[in-house]
Length: 219
Image 1 (cartoon, helix red, strand yellow):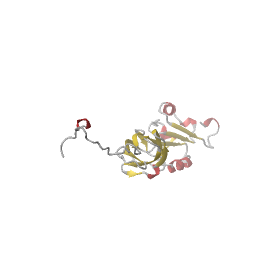
Image 2 (cartoon, one colour):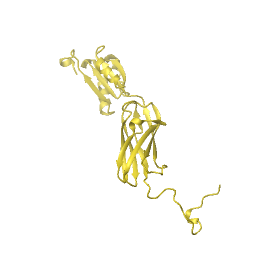
Image 3 (cartoon, rainbow, N blue to C red):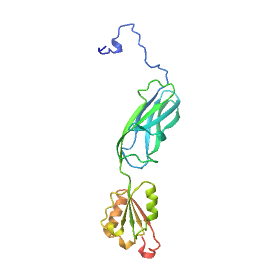
Image 4 (cartoon, rainbow, N blue to C red):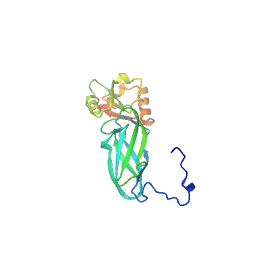
């Protein structure tokens, strides 16, 4: 009617208050979601859902991203009354999410739950570009096998010769692979760059041998 609603304490004596939701009705509430602030495209991550139940029951959790359902992430759990954390594991393991800012929304459903206003939680997530791996080859086609393997896993692969690695620019890659690269072909500055990449940045370094690099020429 356009008039402000008065608090219950201001109602006339004898007024009967009728609760909209039965006090003993089952209720499941989403208390919050936890996800990384950012993840690389194709890099699996877990989404943690904090719940509260006022009585034991089965709960169905469904996930949408930007209003697009992700049925493969749905999970049904049996929980006791109280607080719980349920993990939706390995999201984007099968298919990378598009790069950019996304909204992940989880809805909880339980039989008999008539108070639906507390059944939803949301969190923001930024997906960056696919992980880049640098493949350095000592000779043409030296890394063909590992290249095919990584590309099948949807990694962004950059291939260079050992001469092109002379500048030591490796910081943008999550890992560097040296395939059949002779020791003398790696400049001291590049060695230091690779060392810092592993020890300070947590990057990966794989060394793949070659039948042509026996003895002191190998790594």
